[in-house]
Amino acid sequence: MLKIKVSFDTWIQLLGAIGVIGSLVFVGLELQQSQRIALAEMEQRRSEQTTNRALAFLEGEVETWANVQGVPLNELSPKGRMVREMHWYWATQMQQNTLFQYQEGFISESQWDVIAQRIFISWNNCQNREFYDLRLLETAFIEYLETLPDECAE
Image 1 (tube, one colour):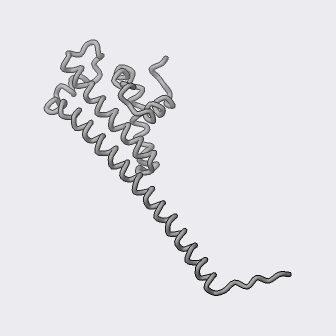
Image 2: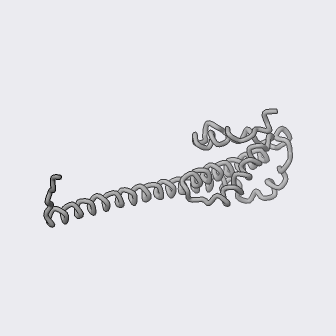
Image 3: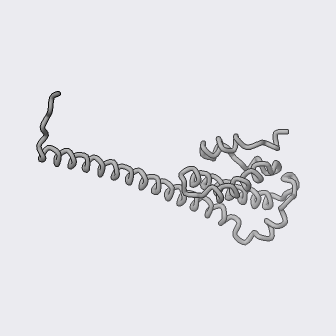
């Protein structure tokens, strides 16, 4: 049997190299996590800007919003339709952002279960379905909507 003698200095160098590699892996993981957080923050800010714009149109329109609930779209005044459309635009942006936050791991399962139910109810509100303008939505949200049972297709 052949014996190879390794010096103490070689062992120290090997342990040092392993330590350097381990710390580089750790730094890489930290950078990846920081990037995910930064992307989530950017998505949140973008969503806030979009929803703030929609909410600005709804400022002072609580009474109009209350009066358009349940009214068929073809019976709404132009103002009533705009108020309903802006509300749904706001709601859709919030849903889209929430899905992104959930997929990135920033929303718990129990929170998501409630939000997913709200999205399902909104998606299956057939008289307002046209307000889900798929041209303006992110691909991941469209793909999620396509997985939902479609009660409006019947």
